[in-house]
Image (tube, rainbow, N blue to C red):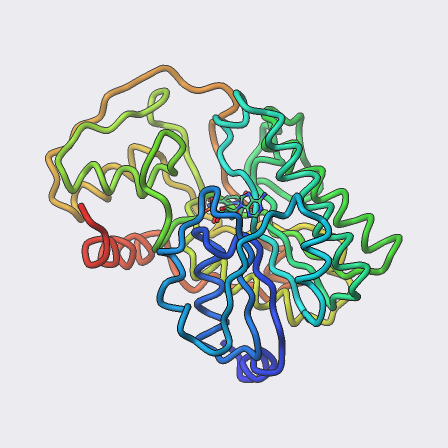
Length: 328
Ligand SMILES: NC(=O)c1ccc[n+]([C@@H]2O[C@H](COP(=O)([O-])OP(=O)(O)OC[C@H]3O[C@@H](n4cnc5c(N)ncnc54)[C@H](O)[C@@H]3O)[C@@H](O)[C@H]2O)c1
């Protein structure tokens, strides 16, 4: 990362919501190891784990607050004296949102509004927040380009779209600089591998290590723009220190701009892990989109985003980490 940015990190204080989760814990680790003045990890441990941040707990520039973004008074308190907020806290998973939609309104919509409002009152310098490729809904053509979104097809997608509308409003009306990052299928260390709502890559790796069968929903030809965690960290950090107001109030695709099908993923993992796992096909799930591929030119031009890791490089680093760190 650029020296100017690394120097700026040392002079800044950060609040990472959802900091005990997958992406949040990677952001905390990056900021702490690059000697940020202060990093507060704020998380209610709904899907996040203390285990994810245990190595940071002894660092002088790191602290953990167990708290909920639905608690506005608490947020108002913890954001005092903070320069930048990296807002990752949310309920993830499209399929879960189909069966528990109200939780997506309370956690993702109201929770995010609370974050923006606390930031406005406490004059936070910038809020970078997690959006999602799901906001493209049923828009048919590829690659997905900002400004061309279709009808939303899940409560999760709606919650993220509403977040973006608040992000835009808080910049246009209140001049709170906000930047939304539309992540496309992120993967990497500390991603949750367990349970019905785990993402496909950690879940497949876990099962393949044990040579167990893998469930595929649909024909396996559905494709995703799988994005390695280091690319997502870079996008967040570049956004934090961006001074170009052209970016504020907007949301950007953060991906690799390459897609792989579930069948491609299976083959790649199988050869890397030397596994005898086989696929079991089940009916496609409601709310899932068939193909996803990002156009990342806007992020390249405005955020100076430039993915450092390809899909294959990311997979190989992740598998190494998995084999060295996970109880299998
Ligand atoms: N992982 C991906 O591929 C992906 C893709 C698109 C968008 N996103 C978004 O990125 C963000 C981070 O996702 P992740 O993959 O790290 O998921 P994660 O589940 O690992 O992290 C989310 C964190 O938010 C916390 N949280 C949930 N509700 C909360 C609340 N009410 N108050 C405080 N904390 C709360 C959880 O405990 C968890 O630690 C989310 O906003 C998610 O919607 C992720």
